[in-house]
Length: 407
Image 1 (cartoon, helix red, strand yellow):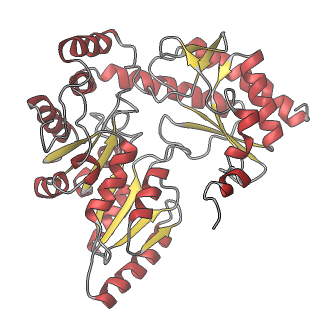
Image 2: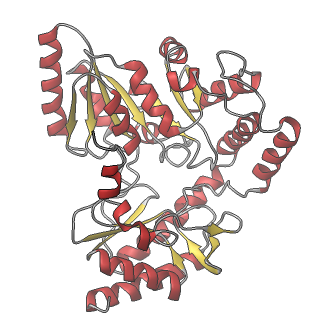
């Protein structure tokens, strides 16, 4: 019998194989100082484009005060126990009610984390006879939820409606053959790598042709899209057709937690059957009260979203004017596509950080195909015109070096 750890020592994994070289710089870097558009990395001031602090709430004085006051009043232990047993409060239920109203749904359930929540939602809804149809570029949390599903699943090419219909036909045929089960379609409001919105309106319009329910993960759209900030469904005019609307607090609200909203009868079922919440400690009171404050600011301070979009459009326009490929983004998420391998990307990142004081996330093989580099920039309401201009200069100069083969 082999030692189960033996294979771990022989194969560190696609990312782990680079750990000795990457750790502390490219992977697991340490940003220090107050969260904002400028922080310290290895003692140097950097313009930071890697934080999903979309509305700049992480260090907003009103948010900091609400968090501090709640922590002083309740501590981090309250309430003790899982919601179902001893961890429920009026404030937890108030936050659920306000979230449901904000995204135009009847009811909502709080969850401790987005990643955990979406996985457990899929597990609670789908049985072995049910079929899941999902977008190929769905986030890892959705993919891991699918791995828990004992039934069939069909993937459609990213935002490809023709292929979506093909997979729906396969799913429908299987349901009819086995004479049991239903179909759950899963997609995202905003795809966090490319920044393009999911085709929610077009998918929802096919409900008359196919029988399915629609679950949308709108982590990057909640608070940033739509007239009121209710997300991609509101922006596309199809929020009513989304059966289950999911989002996290980790993006626009700069906090911890998540929620799922929908019809009251369905949310009630999930509330009593979602294992990751039934068997987990309740979200601590300071987070609940802090999130109530953040949600209030989303409702009453539209200037935060306006500033986010002003910065995003300035950054994206500046990149396009300089000849950069930013793909099909129609959200604040700003990818920059370049050609090059891991070595070129490594040198370019170091140049940006050490000589231009720009800190942003980069994606290379094996996450994307060989020969490609993607920088992902996340503009926020906290960024300034100076941040944007310094970044545009840095990208222009380092791209010229990349093209010249200097890296």
